[in-house]
Image (spheres, one colour):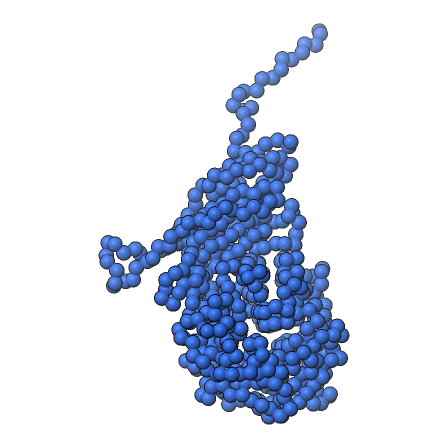
Length: 530
């Protein structure tokens, strides 16, 4: 029987029709900024741009705002420092401006100490709890010498025997006051413990500065080395040498010795370049943010990078370029759970890098013109570039005046990782995006879809008019607006773009501190390989 060819199979029209659109849900980039990994291999939970959004475990939170807390001074503010007394009623916030020290705790600045003699207005301060229970603030500045603030007597200049006036920094280690002399390898300490005056003794640190330079600062580091908790004296050189000293009495070699010398890279020359971090100390240098505990244990390397590894490719060149500019700071803000690296202005623009201390995820802050910073009562304060004093990461708006007027909604900018939507080899036509926010009021949003590893910014600024809620027992019933309750807000936005990879770029304006990006949905039409 001859073979008979089969007729071609004709598929039903419905089953042969191509699926027109597909929908993918993408989580918010809670992993924060990532400048380390290849763009094509980056996790979808990381971001290429994250400005004024703090990455948290449950989403990306629009940072809080900032508001002025004191009237502007006549001269620029060069340093800001706080005094946290035993009695919180005596707490003070001080600003260095025009060669004087000003009390800027209230709305009106008061000159507390005139003519300090400081040559650059950059002050180093630390607190010292005396055996009597009194808490004093120790302060030094090049040319100004050594000053002490006490709640009862105010500012007084101390002149310990032998101590020079060109001092760079001050620290307290094992109840003894230590100083670094500006642009030398010599440090000084007071002969008596639990004293703020007396005889100063020189101690030469030149032998540990193997890469040259001078001593930049002294740090008290508390560490459990396996034989109990002890305090170590950390000496940091300008070119990155770090010496760790152990013992009690620096006058006796038997009780005071060098534990070792390590290298972290050159450190910023002006401002504060370190901070306590839990039971550790973080040092900012050209190698990034270096934890002392990992450094001395040999665990800080390319194979075991530090906490700033994700932003190191961007942060390191900034430190190299601006390390001699004023003014740097590394500060932890407990009420916002962030560690902030305050950079000097770059071409007049202020940008800070911030790390979520709970997750290690990074973002940037902009729109806060931080000249110098301090913490008082757990609240971040900073001096502005227009000679003002402001509370940072405070309230819902940016730039709020003392009369509570003139503020603007906090503006965020975000772009997540590029996503192949599980089809890296197929073209996709992107049509719509729906961001999902959890907040008290619908934010203003403008967005676009960037394709093929492009970083085009969103044109224009989203509009947002914050709702002012009413005060109980003052507002008119039936007209007043109730305080907001967090809700979910989501809307579709039309986009255009053709590519193998796509990333949503978004500008957001909303209520600072209570607007969280939870996720976003992307609608697209898959195409062919070519």
